[in-house]
Length: 405
Image (cartoon, rainbow, N blue to C red):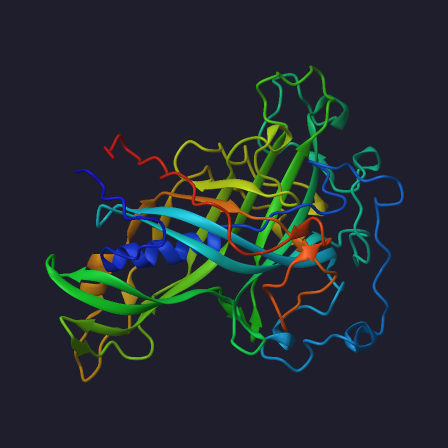
């Protein structure tokens, strides 16, 4: 069945369209020039590590004009977890397979903390990217030659680093609702023909009251091993991942309110994984300079087995699956006064393997997140760098299982 292609920014389709859009939103990752990105700008000796932040974190934020604004306490203290920080925006294009619809979205906001502190392992206080001393240098988890053994000298190695991203919704007058990927009214079709509207909210979950960021992982390959890597082997692999919840509210069907209640949301968070589409060394995605991301079949093979190095920290021992579209879980707690509308909402919105493409714009590096004015420009007067407008919407992602477009 042909997939309608609404113009950029249109929000038409079924509930599934909105749900997928929001899920795709959190997948998109920030990008932009950032000092020390090993995939684009290998750090010099003076850049390879960043001094630990002063122990008195209050001193770091004492002169921050965002102090006291909404969202300030939900973000990490300035320079406490990364080499640098700033604002990013992104755009995305998603396909909702259940409803056979295609939608686009722009201007998804995030605070990017580039280069998470990684050294020493026991209590990281600085950011180091120097594969020659094995700091953040790990065996390639995705590709290895057949002659590789347990001896690191025979293995293809990669430089590994991580970059947290905190999605947020800017508020009028300054400040932000941290954790919100998107919150917007969508137009949809109920029961196949009846026009309807609803508010769709996608957010990252909180654990013990703390917002859980999205995480960008980057592996930059080094030339070593028992045989040289083949020329077709990508020089980088990048993954943006996290968990998101999707919530529906304010539903009206043909102008008549339908009470969904305050807790109509997915019964568990959805897993979001966006792989870099293309090699950062040849103009594809990297956490510091941005580019194209995707979640669809065949984009990346995933890890050969469990990650096995202490520099993966809490991710050590996990297996990263091959790329695929996003699975939207069933909804629960939808309806009031004893009316359970959860099966109806799930039938419209939930389903597996919904493909997504995204583009991340430039990182506007400030050394802190400017919640008092997120949209202001950086750079120089002659060469300003601004978060808006967001990057151009990417092309529609490929559909799985040979489905037509």
